Picture 1 (cartoon, rainbow, N blue to C red):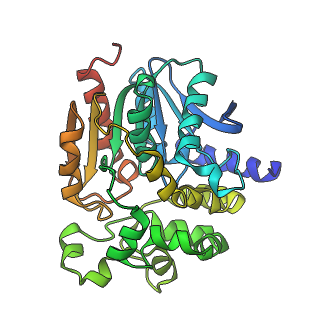
Picture 2: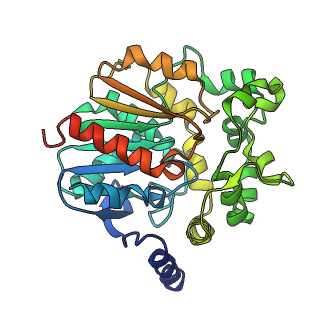
Length: 334
């Protein structure tokens, strides 16, 4: 790690909503960067792709102000946390072990967890495999998917073709190279608002409903509107210039292995759960949110209108209010 680079990040941080400096813990063989704000009951926030603990910059101060100890790590392969080199280092079993290691390092038996995108997928798996370490569950965007009866990558390839981003990531390292060649451009193409409404998406011909991140990053025009300020974009770009994208993309390359590991696991979840979805997050079908409901016995659902995939960054005030209201209603201190 380049000290000059991180001094630059610190300067960026000072310009971006006073996001805290990290402290570092040892977790499951990683040196993990952990960003904390506030004191009180622990709430741990897990980011998705292509994101960082910084994606929770609007949530940490709001939770801290409400009497919560808000904790957001850079997850395996991202930001200032260790970037293991093998694809197999990014299996779901390792991602969950990282969370256990984080809890242990912070001397926490259990915590309330918030997860977005891949962070949500990790938490759904953890809720099935290690529910005793989760007090309450707050999930953004990605519902609990019943385990498919057939190998998932073949199924997705059959439905959506080779260009679909999850399939494309399996087949080559082109995405790793293209994204890393200009991280600022890639992040600026990805993390945007008002990219497409669900209504407009559903009217597209089938071949245009295939979400291809390579096509998005190579297209002449960006969709939607910029979501990040210059300082926020600088922060993301600087972090990914250091780390590249192979670590986070390797999470996707274990899709089939993770599916194999869940054979025979009871998918039902009895942990109190708040789900915050987004009407215009077209990665997710509304039928998939409905399909989750029978599997989660204690579930509260809110769907945000006029919101895409980057929920906690697009609608921070609304997301913060929903989280805090639900925590108060559910008795945060139980």
